[in-house]
Length: 114
Length: 114
Image 1: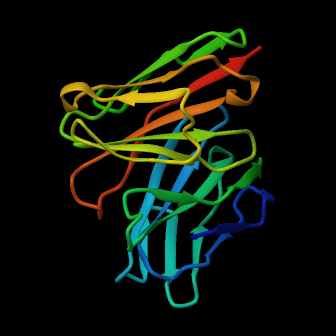
Image 2 (image 1 turned 180 degrees about the vertical axis):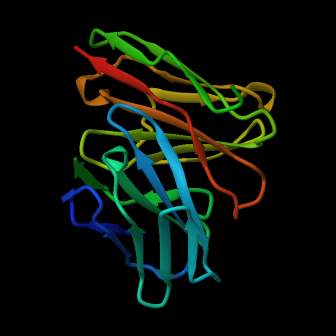
């Protein structure tokens, strides 16, 4: 059974700082990995999707990397802003029989202080 | 607005009552998912439709839960005889046919069972 772990559970940084969020998964047989952002009481917004054959994806100040063999992904946020404050969730899609669903971590709650 | 739409946004009900939620996916998406999220946890998979066919149901989905997607368009999730443990955010997501595509989530329905 796939399990996804996110470290740290919470992170507080001053504005302007670069930061890294970590995600690990137990079964490396994945189809892809997706990072989401969730604001309090709201749904999820997709940030980046990395296919299993890719090493990284970039969008603006966000960069996500994937090391499938070691079961790890990182989300790098450059020059953080107060508007980046949210919960960031990592989710994997398995490549096996359960490939219709995503398995999520519990998320990292990020607070960027002005 | 061409995103995933969920209705209602909030639902408060008394234990034992039945509730029904609606999800309107992005129009060209043929895959539709329901997830449930409790406070401090990542979303957990409930069920999955490809067009009008319900292809998978999680063990989390007890006999009190039923989901439909008539004509492969909108979907409904009904909970009968609600229990306090059903209190959660119910999230709907849709995606195109390819497994390599992102999931797009709605804003969710927050259910509180008193």
